Every structure is written in structure tokens, then in C-alpha cells.
Length: 334
Image (cartoon, rainbow, N blue to C red; front, side, top):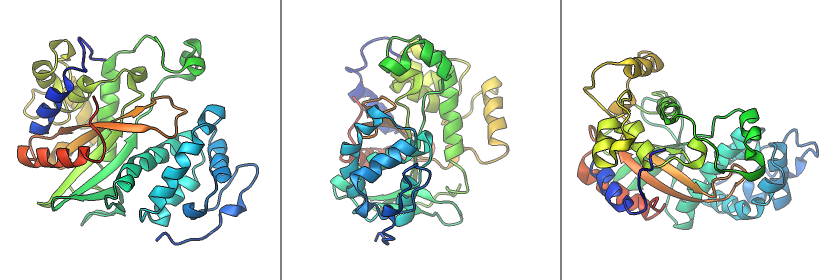
């Protein structure tokens, strides 16, 4: 947690700094629900009822708090389904079987809903030339093909620890925050995992822009801020210079940092990469997402974002252009 003073008065400046570097084929099988919630056939979400959505939530372990959000999530599902989302994309939601899977799919629905509301065209489950895997979304902005892979990064805490802190009763509260270095490591490891060359061609096209959108709302029990995001990407020196000296973590190397002296952190990242190309050579930026409300039971929520750009492979002008277009769709985190 990097909060040495009020962040609310810094965000416009920080955003400037970051920008500078920075149809459905209906199978109509929803009615074949098993009352034990063991299985839901792939279905046309346009035909799904609110009751069936509630059954999916229950099957994935959702209880009363999660079910309260079904009513607000339901129209978003319908809107995204009508936004030319293919059946395979929506099938993953309708067949979710656990909490993590469902919440990841729900993030994608909440994200895509912003584009659907604005009537901004999206392509779903797209491939780049030379890569076999699907990237979640492609959005076109000013003749740029912008590829977006989405990930929910949940809080990694033992249930026993959270139970002792009354987390399940009261949600995010005044719980002692663990060392933030662990969460920075998790962010970087997750970004490396999501940047697999099976999805992203390590040689981007001239008009292609590769982004990873990662929801960090739950890290450090909900207190993560832009300082942590800058640390994970642009590193300690940059963050201390442009954000706050109290955020400096000298042992840490940002994912987009280059020409740093080898240390234990760089060795750890090299081991994680296992000889594969470093994401800093082909990932143009990271979209850090922040939910409101942050509670894990919330299935329908508002999103805000901060984009941190990779200064080595994208120009200031192009970063500014895309940032402005993006925030016309999803608002800036303030």
C-alpha cells in the first residue's frame, strides 16, 4: 500500500505521467437445468431467465449477498449478448462451476458492458497471426487494433486468517496489510502468465497494440493504489521520482524496466519466464482495473481504470491517443 498522502489530488498528474510513457447461434438449452446445480447446458444467454442466472450463481457457491447482485447483472448479460458476443464466449459463463471461474467471467461481462452501453464495436475471442490461442477482446481505435486480455486477481489469503479477522462478516475492514512486495510479485507473475506467446505474437504488427487488463481491487485487502501499479510496471526509481519516495522498493524491478543490474528479483523473473520472450518486448501497456464495490460477493459493479504504458515500444503520442479514447468508454480511476 503506497499512500503517503492524499492520492485524490494527484491522479490527474499521475494520469499525464502514465500517458507520456503511457449471432449468437441459439441452442436454446437453458431449460435443461438440473436442480442440484451440477450442470447447465451451454445456452443462448438471450434466452436466459433471471431464475436461471441465480441458479448458476448458487451452483458456483454464491449465497444471499451474491444473489442480491443478480438483478443488476442480468441486464448486463443481455446487453453483452446482444453486442455480437459469440456463443462460445458466453458458454464459458453459463457453464462456470466454481467461484473463481464465475467471478472471472463476471469481470469480462462488466468490462464488455461499457463498450455495449456506448455502442462501441468489440470482437470477442480473436487470434493474432502466428498464435494459436484466443485473446479475449479486440477493439479498434483510430486505425489501431487493440487486443485486450482480461484477468481478475483475487486476494490470496487463507480462509482461516480471514475468518480470524472477521473478513467474511464485515468484508474489507481495518485488517493488517501484509508486505506489499508479495502482491507486486503476484501482479508481475500474473501478467507474465497472461502474456503467453500462445496468445500474443511476440512481434507485434505496426498498428497492433497489446494490453492486459487486470483487476487489482482485492489486493492488500482493497487498499492497492496507483503507486503499487507503477511499482509493478515502471519500477522503484520511477515511482519514487514521479509518485512518492515512500513507495521506493530498491530490491524490485518493474516489468517494463530495462538495463537494471541483475539481482534476486531479476533472477526470479528469469526463472518464471523459463526462456520465453519477456513481455516488455511485445506488451504495450497494462490496464489496472478498480471495482466499486470491491466486495467479493459483488457481481455487478462499476469499473475505473489507469493505464500504465510501456515506454520502450509505444510512442507518447499513440499512448495519449489510445488513453483518451479508452477513458471515453471506461472512466479514469480517481
